[in-house]
Length: 130
Image (cartoon, rainbow, N blue to C red):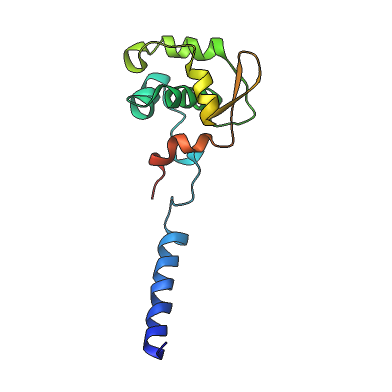
């Protein structure tokens, strides 16, 4: 490799590092990029609307837990929130929790209780500031 090529490569790597490592928002977690302070209808309209049912389920659990993986959310709380937003989310189906669990978005430590899994952030990947 010629000296000029090496210098060019070093400059390109430096530019790439500046973009990837310094640019604000690149490594923010969904708790920082997704606005959990919105009211539930605004949250659903902005983030949840139009997604697959299992993704909607996971996002509603994330909203109710405010991104906290240790917070347990009951199916009653989820159905209650969902029921207040049927015009946005459509009707609830009891298979949604099973599919969300199968996809790895949520876990269920016991019957009718859900927590976010370690993979829940994938639900909001498109909202990361890049």
